[in-house]
Length: 432
Image (cartoon, rainbow, N blue to C red):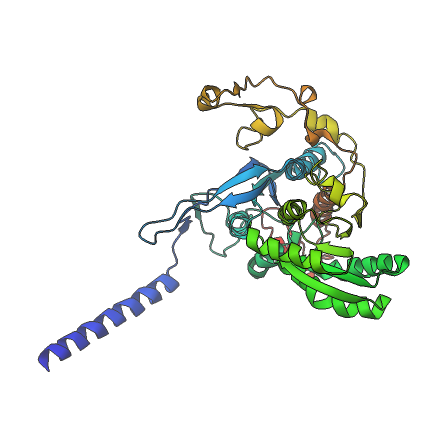
């Protein structure tokens, strides 16, 4: 009985100390915050008075280390350099550079950027979004009213619907604006109606449907069947869900289903990585005679127009986002050199060289820092079909115009409480 009473009193004492500690912390908050840990992310940064964030797919796959649950796991590594994705990131860098040279828009304000690679992986993309929201400073002091310039005032990206939904659900708590530059679930209804019109025009009423295993594809899976029946009187012969990872058995089952079906028209709402896995199995089984209908996510992407795939994908119909012109962008790309981009793994893919000595031992060429893109054969310089890039360009300018309007606000006529205006020194993201 005595030992129980002692344990009880000790427990009560500990509880009181915890409550007292919590009370003291709330009454006397710390004067500074310290970043607990940094994510190992691929990124490019440029300082400025106001920072814009960006999320892009510079690599299209990642590898996670095996988890033993006995020690802290290593950070995932990114693989498969995506040249169009890198061009997307450079579009944002170009737009900000162009804005900084514009004397009429945001005068006396220098824009900077923090651009991260999501590696086509939700975990990495979400980590990058959190890094943009919290910043990467090791420690910063708290002001009495918790005000101050945010790490970023807006984010351009993410290109994936699932990633954007995941990020916005958290960043929305901080009222941080996100401008997506690619198709999202909320606008898929227009895409579906367009595809239904194509099917109705050609009289195709018996089709198959394949979607990616994410919000982008599953939204279509839930709604397309009823919309297709209502708009064109058609029916689905089958539907399948394409996994994100490379699961040969799953893709084999899907292609087996396609081969057995009498439907010769296949609609695919998915991304490049899914199509590569799918078409690899289609080629393996030699499934020919199909009419492919592509969603905007893979209509014009590179990597599918190969001698191996084209005999099967030739004649594909698809919808695409609007193309635009960005004057001066190609000249900007030509100024890129390996020394400036050493933080990204694009040297081997663009210049066929690397700064590492190990690369030389493996038979590669070491970069000198004097390489020029005009002497390299790369799709990076292909600016004839600027579609996602044009959306990125417009998104950056949309944020810039919002900031410019805010800075030209007249006190007493402002949009905030008491007709006040926001200032650059006390700017909050939601005011943008």
